[in-house]
Image (cartoon, rainbow, N blue to C red; front, side, top):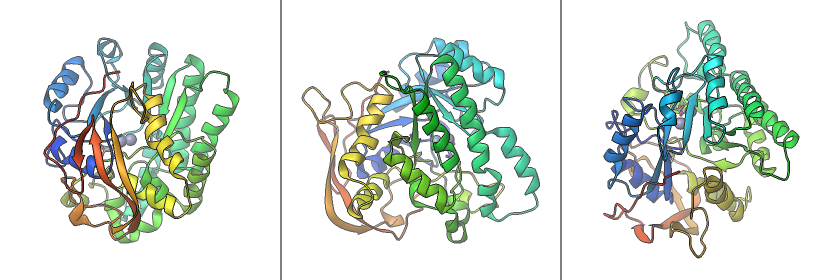
Length: 382
Ligand code: NCD
Ligand code: ZN
Ligand code: ZN
């Protein structure tokens, strides 16, 4: 789950810098989101983006298409995309489906397509925003976009997924109340078949909390927002019992200048594609998780959920996409080492043990401590 910003916002990121950050972070395939400028909401926009990205990426890539109030029929004509992204709450960009009947139409008409939701209830957010409108401290972000707003949207999405049997994927769950609702759903609907509902958690929701506003201000303004320690504990527990299926970065770069604006103007999102695997390797070294689980959450399950053929495992007949990690290598995360165009990271100063040292994409060595001049990334078609 990445936002590589092309077309339209290449001043924040492009495929050269975004995919360099990915391979340096041991990532071999990314699924790119449709909140571009213009947004990817038509066959024409999708085909244009395909042409733009082809041959320019160091990692494999797939594309989401975005839902709007009136493009369900158009999406039926689109081919080979990873899934439909629905913003139930407004986030960065203009994409939004806040009408209940439009939302239901997508669930009804696309029972076999992955529907990936940004689940924060827009009415709930707007109500809270009104109450805080005189304040400017970035920490209000977590109060305005409360766990209750996320919970409301998750409940609505699960209700529809139950009604129409969808392949629903809930993006970036961030709170205890959300994962409890998903847990109940999975238990109630467990059959001999796979449950078709899945969800992801981001490293920033696993490792950062609201305390950080005091240090980083708008630099950690992100949707959904950072939560309290109790929520973080609930997310780790939900990984353990497999309520959460995958770890996904939601790499969403914005420039330092943009992040330096007033709270109400600064855009939401943090970069993360270069740091996700080192953070998880470090967690393994601290005994928080084992390496097999990291592989499951970051390789096996993502490939299963999105039906990526020949990916997610190192096996005969599979693509040679893999990374070599040195579990004893200790390094400090530094802004200077970030290959994202925005050149900063919310994990700055953290000392992590366990780093990718070689990355292969389709059998080609693309990173060995330095990023190679190889653009071996291919489009994954769905
Ligand atoms: C994302 C972005 O900047 O594109 N921002 C964010 O805070 N996560 C959009 C999104 O995924 O919601
Ligand atoms: Zn989102
Ligand atoms: Zn996102």
